[in-house]
Length: 327
Image (cartoon, rainbow, N blue to C red; front, side, top):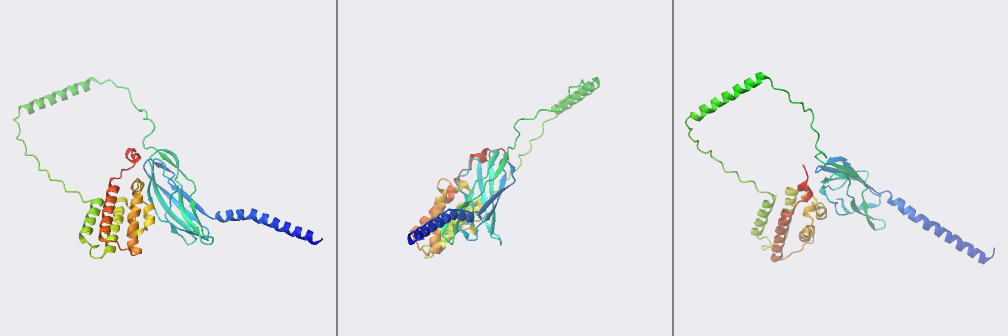
């Protein structure tokens, strides 16, 4: 074999190995990502319209992957008739399995698919970022009332009334007539004085009134004018978080700003409300963590925006399906 033939043989061998590696690499990459799983189970799998349905999450990641957010959220808009009530933060077990749960309510009957949830992750070896999506699950929602009224049962034919019963019936009617006549001849009784009506006690203040009272007190304190602008922003942010805990039963004090934004009920996140809340939380975080120091005028505007956000939450209408559902 001369030098030219040896050169051609070497080039051909290298090309063959390159082709083999090129075909094998996608398969290896696919095998690596097969170690991820996001399983969802429904409890119960058959529920009544308006009842709460609990979703159990079980997430398994590759040993080289890290979650960048521990609160699952729907990857698309919820279908009509479905309301997301709450989402809990995932908790990691010793075997690198994450578990959590969410609560939904369905207001339309029929067999329906559970919304797909997603979690962002990052592969720290390659720097790749992606979204792991949950698998599919179904739940059957049944109406409260039956489809048609049941037929009447155990209706017997009318039986003839004996003569003795007619006699005693006439005697009873006569006795009632005599009693009515005696009552008519009695003098009218004195009218009793009207009963004293106690004024109803004032209802306790709700979460919205308590939040407004706290904002008014913060404004009267004038912390921003005295140079305590960080205290002013932190107090306003705490008012919003405490309102969500009291009115919506969200653990707002325990969640980060990002986790709290994605755990808002749909009616508090629609029509730009999520974006407005994100701006308020962002300004508070800049003052708290980045040591930003706005002037007193900006602090006053921040308090006004918080009050407007509370009013918008208060006036947010509930979904029509919840109001029209037969409970």
